[in-house]
Image 1: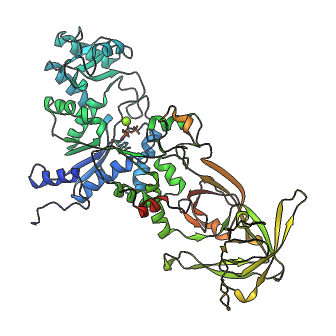
Image 2: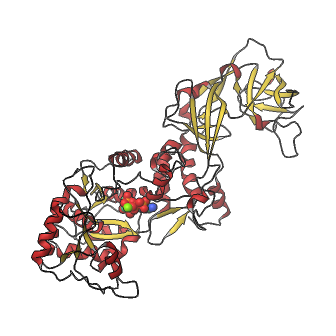
Image 3: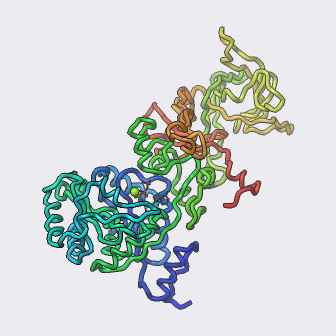
Length: 564
Ligand code: ATP
Ligand code: MG
């Protein structure tokens, strides 16, 4: 390969092949892509697929990727969304440098181009109401009907369009439409609306405008202004491409971008629609856009998902043209993979049961060496205080255990991890018959968790010194929906999982957990991955469960029943 050849893509897919071919043939000297969110909500887990594709291609081929807000609908758009989208993209690890743009920056230019179209006889102001326009549009099987205003004189359309801009007419009174073909088999070409009247305050242009370009008129022209070479979008815009191309061909735009469509990401147990997510927030079903159950980037971050896990997931699923649904277990697998390598191991007891070691000295505190991360020697170790009174997990004891229960039971010996073997001697109950305490003995010869005579208890438990335990609230999260295909049988809201959040109070954690910063995810040994919530305060720790330890995707893969 000569040095002028484009960098070979890291991961080939049909879009990267197109880009490589366009560079090789000399059609373009460099590649320019863009990520074009509408600031009408927070980014969700579908967006990183598009972000990684656009920024990834720009990086791999030595080009650049713009961040452009598609802010053409002031009714739904807010500064809060603009800010959160930028923060989320940065957090995901992508950078647009100085290339931050807004479709609203181009309103004046877009208006001029609309005037050009009218002058060329290719657009007209229509006085029909929205309902009448719909009636005239026809159906998939029947052609539409021309509007009675379609052939009004150019001067009249020019005058009306100018007066629309000046604010002389109420919302919905008139629209500017392209004059293409009311009989086209593609409904998008049946004289699509280009501008509508909307007396609404815009987050960036304030009240300067009361007409706003439609998405289809703004998008391609914004691409052309910015010199975008490949305008990558999802499949639902495939039918809009003829209109995209028609506008580019009929306007004096400075460049000719090419629209390419790919399949959007769908995930089981998940709904990826900002409109629906906004309803969840506004109707109080969740704690906010960043609720740890939300499929938003901010929700996943608060839940403890590392950006690297999300990037790995997006790389695993690839880019194609066929719509499909990805198992949420695959996302969780990618996240566990990162956390298993990086998360510090810690002890926490979610449902505490007191354990007293009768033969352990009352005043003694020993420091036990505990490994911080068995997958990463550089993470070192820490000291765990060990005392006569401990807390263990209530689930780790059964008074009358069934055959397959190997943990603690009366008369049985187990290992307390990093400490000693203990044997349960007596069960203490309160007046109601509830177990409140276990009386045990320990074997001093087993310090560190090994026995000199080769005894090997069947179970190893985690524990916390009662004197050193730090109280915490722990929020256990599960899928937001109770079924893999929410809404398949009716209302989405009926499929919300009522057990998606369980709040546990009175949990106890090892002292080192008070030091974990928000944004870092740790493993509570034997329980799962957890991260401090922003609701945490000194003396009032709150943790979110990121994921349990069980990897259902790895199991599916091992059985070979699914192809990635
Ligand atoms: P929503 O339906 O959630 O509102 P959208 O398509 O309206 O999504 P935008 O913010 O307008 O979202 O889209 C920004 C970019 O992200 C677009 O190029 C869009 O195609 C892409 N995108 C949105 N959802 C997905 C998804 N589920 N998978 C892949 N790309 C997506
Ligand atoms: Mg949208």
